[in-house]
Image (cartoon, rainbow, N blue to C red; front, top):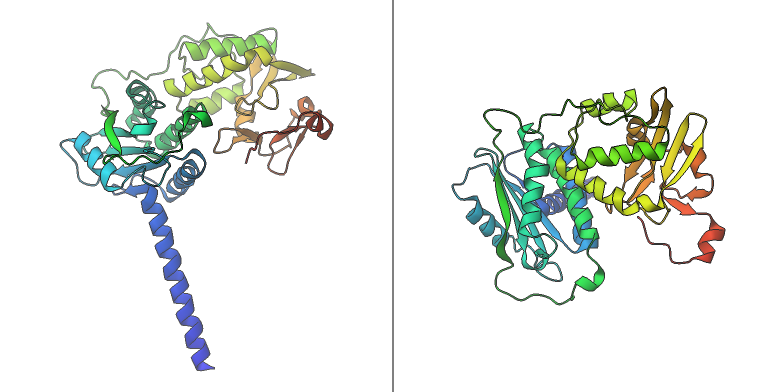
Length: 355
């Protein structure tokens, strides 16, 4: 009996050790947070995204934060890229590296050969300045990396299967030095990302679609004030503590403009929804409430009940909200993803996979 107990204890120790090693290896395969910039929750979420990027987009995204500063972050990034052999586990040189030097307040994104067409230097530099810089300047680096990853996923979604040759690259170097770097130091004088105070230009409109067009105009102008009249009071409170970047606004603008022609408005009493064809899974519905001044966007409720998966496809976290009236002709699976009713699905088979 005692021998059995000893055997059970030994097996338990082995299993715990094996799990710990496996978890550590998985973490080190995607993140090396030497500077301890991420919380455990942030690291877990980011690793999940990175694993899915590798599995479904064939991209190995590696994040390194430096505990010791470097005088040449370009050389440091290239060395890390080569030592980690980023792209060696993909079907081509599809590695992507983000190096952060918090002491020198600088970062570098390094791009593998086969991703240079998707992530050219200008695009990467734009992401760094318009997306990462505001988060770094507010010391919210973990959130910035998560937001950056979402934009990378959207950019990758533009790549079609035919864009890949499927051939394994055998070049000696997996990166040609493509990418960009920035300093994350905050300007000494004025904060260039301060929210605008010109809020009167974007006002609630007589119809939900007209208000949505006002929102489109605010995105195009990179208007970041949370106090616009096109927002409900609850939405203004929500946005007052929410960091919005130029890159996020541009991404939202692109998606909206690509799909506006297919917008459909449904109203019930003082509520309305502007929705898009169910197959357009990357453009979520917009919620509206009618106020004295006109129809206002209800992003506060949208943020609570609408979520996105790793492919930036929307779903309902809950069907317990007042806007379900607009989706009576749709069905939702156990994950909250929308579908046409079975009869319509039979007429048009081959609905894209969504989770």
